[in-house]
Image (cartoon, rainbow, N blue to C red; front, side):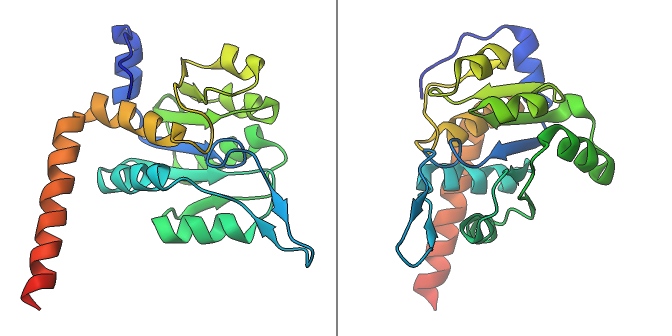
Length: 192
């Protein structure tokens, strides 16, 4: 991950993030949607993003998936990762964020959003911190607090999560805890 030279105000915003709302198509995926001849839909998710989401959840950062489309693949990926809030078929993401804030009693300054295209801008206007994937639309990049080095579906979500966790607890701590828990899990398997 490339090093960012951020000012202290952005670092404070990163440290204060409690919820990261992730757009799906073009952010958690590369934006491709494949339909088979029998009408099935396929999406490709990045395993690096998946591990980043697992690290986020393990370290108390809530993750929300939000998409304008409906897809069983999104439901399945969320379940695999332990993401419990999945908002699909969301044509008005601004209203969806407002409703989510009410239900979860969110302080919008503690909410970050990551997206890639014009339909994300209304949501981005509601939150305290905005990430744009590297290959986002230029208007989305203008809206962003941080334009990431990674493209959608290619590790951008992981990059955003690592920036947040680094500001909150330090990535060295996150990595050390992950390695320790992996060793402990491996020891338990061997002892069985």
